[in-house]
Image (cartoon, rainbow, N blue to C red; front, side):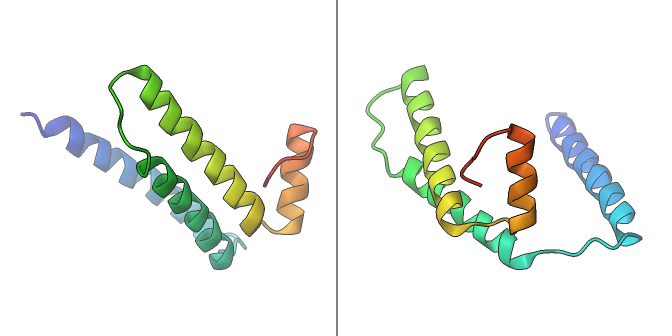
Length: 102
């Protein structure tokens, strides 16, 4: 009944991620565990900063405020921890045509 959409979303995610992993298994892709841990640390800092804000009310204003604080802290921590390698940073900057935090 009510669990059918949730189960369908989970199965769809598993199929999508499984197909990506199957495609990467035959390639020369290597995992940058240090970069992943740094970007997860930056995301955790953004989450903690947004969750430390006291909820002074309800509505779109509070939601937008928390989202903005989480994004700003994530970008600041991303700039501090440098989760991407130098080559990847150059590619990201070329993609945006200007300097970013990443």
